[in-house]
View (tube, rainbow, N blue to C red):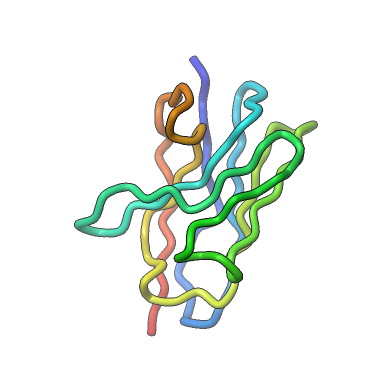
Length: 113
């Protein structure tokens, strides 16, 4: 069974930064980062293909940067200028419209004001 393991979350003050990692047990060409804020539906925030081409949602554009290391089956999410509205559990998976793998446990990001 394919495993997705997210890490790197934590508690940070507004304006701070965090770098998330997602390690997959197999190579996956197209990947995405999602987040689920308390009481809200899961939101897709960025997609990244095998060549590193990215497409960001408006809520994170200009502040978050996705990247990947295909040799390590790892995708990253550099998050800068974090705001309380970014508080959520962050997940990685394939983009919507592709086969979705079993979700990992996610990593909690909490931004204090």
